[in-house]
Length: 351
Image: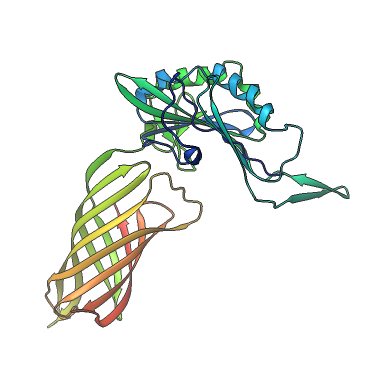
């Protein structure tokens, strides 16, 4: 059985903000810059998304909010029936004049388990209850979103016992404490492992950093393997758990040869511009993961006969091999504009 219940756009003030019925199921009406997840019982959880970290103290009392939601659900949903399609219930306001919209999904897939000769209907998806509201403070209007991921939406009433409010209080008190990285790539409070976040302290966006990007590399060029050293700078911008990276780097490629019984080292230099983007919350669910990335390199200095004059390198894509430090980058070398094209694989070890 598949059911999804979403309750969106609940205002915590008496005034309703402008919203048309067609907008009920749109995305969060602001920029999520802080995100936390609180682990509940039975593998269920509650997610908190904020535009400002200080809004933790302005959230409505969760016991009162849950009481309103659970009392309304039976008026729109038959809690005794088995529903095989997703449904979402949208709210604007919680006063006597609140507007409500119900949207039913169209997914009719059914899943069964054969047990002792009998077929039992399986529920494959969690139920979701999402509450989006308004916070007005200091002349500013901001939004928050609370999402409950439940095995059954009726379980929400089991949390109307003060524990949700207590978790929010703990988060307010310890948000600046020590966060530890878990095996799945998320972070959790050292003293409260049940409070987690995709990044340390739950910071989601609005930051820019200038980073040093040194690495040792090896790539093939025609029938040779060429080691190199890269030193560069990167500007990273993070917003809503998405990061962008703009890079400028210098590469020194080395060719070793014996001339007149003497070992010689020839150095070729490339100047590289690069751009990449990705999700700060991406989890390494497989040993290899592809991220969008592009780089353009130009041969600025050459000693020896390894590279020809006016050599370019174009890199497209970046594979992370098990961690964020080891990368494999497909590339092509060319002279002038797409002449003498040579495919290459470049292994980058960042340190």
